[in-house]
Image 1 (tube, helix red, strand yellow):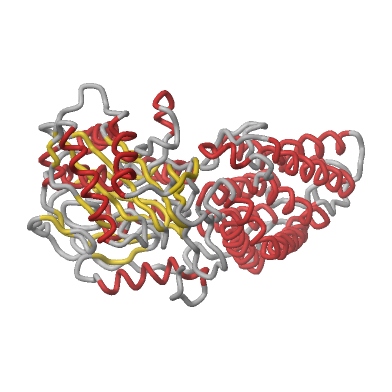
Image 2 (cartoon, helix red, strand yellow):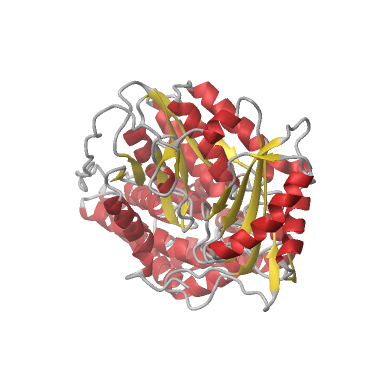
Length: 580
């Protein structure tokens, strides 16, 4: 378990700060992550690795010559926010565009995508390369849905080497996607990992048992089986990877035998003695293989095997020199150039007064009270929500919701103190939620709250029709951004029944408070009903059978939040549509 920490909620930030201090000759900390200490004197494509904390050396440990130009670092097992991605990109961009490279997880796709839109609007060339190497997470016919695990490293290495040679943005993207298309991984866990401050691991296995097909966020395996001897484990991993050999693949391969956090190097060496002969007997030449820890999962006991089929274009990039805090190969000359100027954050940037009507400012008090009620409820339910999420996910939903609501409440209070109306208070809350919580739920809640605020505006207190329109905007933004439908076993399964019930009851003349309370009850019933569903979206999708019988954590938390917010948000006294 993770034993050294102060406040568990500060663990990721403190770990990143300590890392940057220790390796200050190579990297410097910036808002949202870290970038190289020195940048090239000539324009150069910036390759930015990204994802949650807990995977060291990925992602910050791979920043340096011949590899990444920066790393966007989220909370433990949680995607970074769009703001974090944007901030790191702005610090690393060096005149030739930026590429976000990351594993294929819904939260990462949303947040890096939103950051990309913002950068593009400013005239910065930007692309995204997703890693989809995990053969256990989807069948070959749905390879685009696969998640990224240790194949992250080989794809990042090839892209970073290409950018170091001066290749242009389009070429680095092409090579990264080519490497991803030729990379396959499979993993196995022997024991679950434990969050800082948690009393139990995310999942457990019986003694002498392994879970095959794990993810790097602590997701349990697709199925459990008796732990075999090393030679049989090696056979299992090799046979599954080679069964998915890409069409037309060559006979030279890069191989990574990766430890996941608490598997000793000596154990990996024993397993390598089983893996390497099998690959050679299959007719392959192993090109500069790596055995060690490169993409971990906190303290998880487990291993993964990654194979990348090389060709005359990819092999020189795989073997090229690199020098980062956690990985060195050959002698990588540091790029000529000056140390980048330190960035400073002005915590009061953007602070000022707001233009809002007295009715809206009065209703903003109710919005803050609603957020306060949600904050209390989510803190009380943090462990339960985490336990629900751990059944078929990574167990971080409770923690992510707490981080989000804490930031949202603080930002809303600060905006209210500066005279903000309801719309600006909710928008500030949404932006802070997305920035601090990260992950899929973070970006969805953040976008939803901002949409609600924009719909309510700052002119006056909302009437019933205005509140209905605001709720519809909240729901529409989440459905549009997340792409989920009712039945996918997501927060949408509670959100849509709430929205439809509230609108129907309000249109029938029910008082706002009564309509909200009945709609919240419908959302709670719908959330409980998700126990009978199989997930069709997100990290839980590959573990659909494990999820049966357990309500969706996102739907559960949404129903909970809407229930306690109702007495405050639905305290509308004006006639429908009134503005005062």
